[in-house]
Image 1 (cartoon, rainbow, N blue to C red):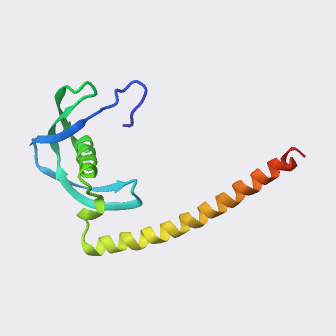
Image 2: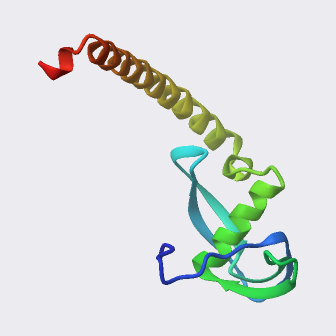
Image 3: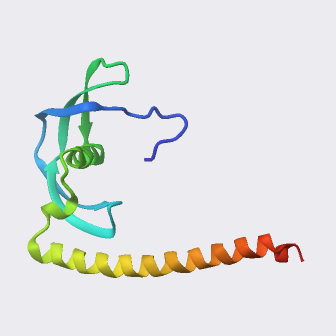
Length: 131
């Protein structure tokens, strides 16, 4: 469930996992750093984290299920680790190939968008849009 106005945003400064409470679980994870790519990753199914809040107070929180997976995923980012670091060389190469294609297509789309924005701006300057 996503964060809504009724939910409190979680802030965790200097987080660390202080215990694991259950068995491990495997799931397909995605990441905004690698759009449309998924990697099977094994993680702890339930953890206790210790972290500071915005006032600097240390607190502990138990995370289970998908929340535990998300916390571990974000903590990986703090350590410079990405989902591709969990992938086999074969899967990593496939992701690399697909990302190169995605970046080329995205770059081509970005060039088109820039051209259109420039055309619209040019038309605004000459008042052609008002006609």
